[in-house]
Each structure stands twice: as structure tokens, then as C-alpha cells.
Image 1 (cartoon, rainbow, N blue to C red):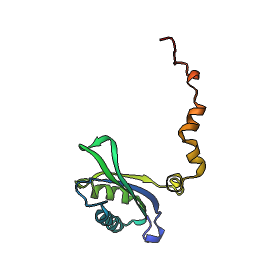
Image 2: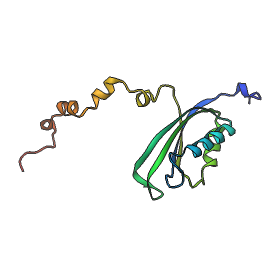
Image 3: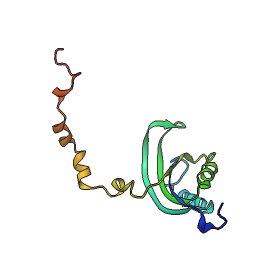
Image 4: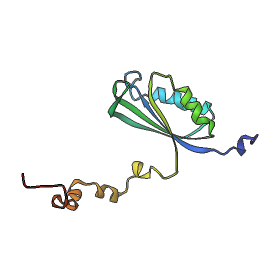
Length: 142
């Protein structure tokens, strides 16, 4: 086991936090700053912080229909994940906290979309390619 901090193998983690909109003011900027301080205190180095708007859930979380999304990229060791989950496990302001391993460039399409990405998902180009008569389960003999 390495004794120096420089010899530790640091990984990048993406931490997605969903906040209760009724318990934070505005976008939750003040609470987000406290999360950044706490993650830094747990030995992580916060590389990126992104605010994603208030979004409606597909299924309610703890009887809430919407939440405020924050996304953080943190460089830390393996013990960081368990520590940050344990820290916010019982916090009533945090509806959900999920930690993923982060790979550089994995979210380039989200933050810097390419023009050909938008062309693939335009409604009219989708309908031109998709022909209803080619569906085997489509029947016109009603």
C-alpha cells in the first residue's frame, strides 16, 4: 500500500446529485458549494461542476415529481465513493446520489453536440426512413 499521496492511483468519478427543489433556494447553488467543499474534504479534487435544470421524473422519487440535477466530475481514490455515499445517505435535501466511473470524452455529445447528431434525430428524416408498410405486425384489414 502506498504511503505517499502522490503514489495513489486516482480515478475520475462522475457524481450526479438530485436535490429536492422544495428544500433549496433557487437552483441550489449554495447547497452545491457545500457539496463541493465536502467532496474536497473527503480527498477528492472537483474537476467540473455542471447544473442541469429542474427536471420532471418519469417515476416519483420519495413522492417527489421533479428534482434539481447537479453533475460533478471528481478525481479521487477508491474510498471516496463509499465516503460520499455515506455522507449524503440520510440527507433529506438529496433525493438521489449516484456515482459513475468517468471516462474522458464520454459526454462530449451532451455538452458539445455535433451537427450530424442533430440531423439523425430530426423528425422528418426519421419518418422518411421508417416506412409503416414494412412492419410485419401492421394490418390494414380492419
